[in-house]
Amino acid sequence: MSSVPTTALLPAVARGDVSAFEALYDRHASTIYALLLRILCNADDAQEVLQETFVKAWSSAKMFDAVRGSEIAWLISIARSRGIDRLRSRKIRGEREDEAGREISIRSSFADRNTGADYAMQSQERIAVRGALSELPEAQRIALELAYFEGLSQSEIAARLGEPLGTIKTRMQLGMKKLRDRLQAFQ
Amino acid sequence: MTHAEFESIAALDVLGAATAGEASSLRIHLLACIPCRRVRDEYADATTFIALGLEPIAPPRELRARVASAVERAGRKSDRWWLALAATVFLGFWVWREAGVRAELDQLRSRNDRLSSEIAAMAASPRTIELTGQEVAPAASAKVFIQPDRRRALVFFHDLPANAADKSYQLWIIKGDQPVSAGVFDVSKDGKASISIENLPVETEIKGLAVTLEPKGGVAQPTNTRFIVAGNT
Image (cartoon, rainbow over all chains, first blue to last red; front, side, top):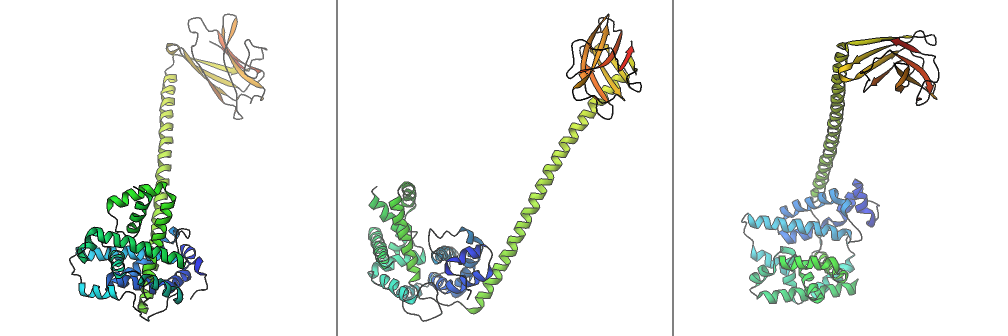
């Protein structure tokens, strides 16, 4: 692990500092990989997109603006966007979704899996975040997760869950508001 | 639409779940509404926490080496890109220089053509006058090519002494008893100079031409008779 301080990683990466890039990978790869596995439900795809995410981070580090968000938020944004794109292109190619597998995945998203090190957050903070998520009514949480992890639109979520569009919209808005309020209190 | 309604749209927008119309109207509203922009940023932070709520999973160890290798390749591509850019800039500069040189060359050719035609015209001039050095500058000489049909004359001087900074050479056309100024000129260290006389008074007989050294800029009438070069027609 590099001795470069956390806040200095991306600016150092932008200057072409390979050791800072390695530190960035060591620090956040586990979080990003978990996210991509959750989105893509496929290890090969998740690894490919993880690689794309970090290559993008290497080439676009100059674009990072610490005022607009944290380092991990920036990486998550890149990874999610690319992960959803990959998911959509897979759907266009006609690959069938394993809905049963997805359902299991949705319900177990925040179950404990004691794997790998993670430097993005201290475990206590992570537990607090997870607590905020788990306190959401399940219907709201599932609606949020379908949008966030699968990139579904309101109408697609409504169709998937067999609920009226207005109900889904309200659930998502309420869920996001609660999450925002809880996390603000946490911060 | 109220601020509360925009905030509700923002909650969907950060998930990518707002409709195209909702997202569009929100973008426009956020341009002018700082409080709603702040709310949208807070919702965006909240979505980050959805990802952070996942338990981290270490990727395979060999992936780290693959990523490092991909980054190295990206770096090399980037280098090649810069190299290509540098080559393009150099090529552009070369083309620009080439265009400049060509333009200059065209100007020189045009000037050369003009001079050639003037020389040809002078060679065909029906009248030439030789001016010889006088006592002040015995080595000096000049040749006058007169083109009466164009009311024009060209005079080329050789081996004239360079004039002082506060002095000018002045060429006089002598018609009758009155010298008429035909222009002033300076002579460089190589002793050469030329002057073009336009609107040459060909209707009256020109008896001769002479050059005097006068105050800078010339005078209406010669201030001395120490002719440098002179000649009769």
